[in-house]
Length: 213
Image (cartoon, rainbow, N blue to C red; front, side, top):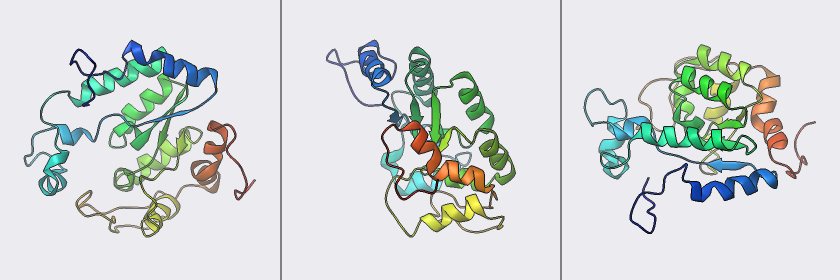
């Protein structure tokens, strides 16, 4: 969003100067975990229609009202993954489409080299548990567990959303989600892929030690 080229223009996600990096990752069979943009609401006006108003009020530096827009970044990202079909891209934070699973599905369907991680978007799965359940079952080979930080007190919330059918419970950060969450009740076969099996498949050389076969 902010990196500049030597001529002062913004370095776009799909800039041809970056192509050799993605090509090398394909040749070396190295997956690319990439974080592009921020939640779409961060780019929108801070008004009663913005469901992230509390977070943006508490942390005004997270607002992106000037410069590049969310859809510009998504277009550039999609161009990048299409240009490099042999490079595996893991899109952090579900590509910021956890709140729009139809759009997320379209991205996966059109780009077999794309995977999602679930870091920091649990609140979106927990408010649409049935749709999220069906999505995770359908795309069970394309989703990886992820976290921004090692925070042991936060993990039980992930387990509860993914593994149980519990209803109407709190998220661990009220400024991220003031709504209640519900469990997705995912089957064990999907949970194993989510927690470790997909990571072992996508990341060559990752040791399986400590994981269930």
